[in-house]
Length: 256
Image (tube, rainbow, N blue to C red; front, top):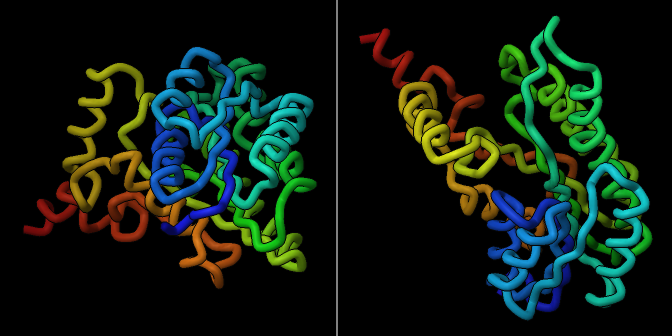
């Protein structure tokens, strides 16, 4: 198994991509600590994951809660080999109609929280550890109304390179997974998700959203020894939306 004997902490591990990654890690032999703010969903996730997982309550924007969670995880898991800084929130922030507090909340969790997550983990990381940050294609897509979210993800993209440089002397790898549209609860109810998947059929080259498990597979690769020489880069999982946008049906139809 790819992660036999390894330990991992996944922030926001109680749903979506975080939970899918926890499943993948456990299936590959890792012991995993998941964090989140909702105790009920954490307990449900931990029950599903079984004896190889522990669940710790922590707000990704609270440095004291993060420090306590990583200290407890390191104690109970006997050190940390992998960190997936996954916790984040979405939200529209249209120009001229946005409460500054809403903007700041997105920045606090998606940007400052990612930095604080790595900082809290640092004293507990073994040499040759792997850190994976969760980005987004919104960093480069220029979607209207998404200034705060896109700005945080662009900043995380830059932070990936900076942290990789800082931690290379300890042989700690820092990389990023960059999801596009993914089937997760972030979109809302089933009807909203259905609408988004219909939209993807014409705007994404592969004509669909990714499943959370497909993003988790990229995280697993970056966490494993298969990626032992990969440092300061990102893997994009978006069905070609940013790499080959002209392959989307909406464009290929116009060329006929």
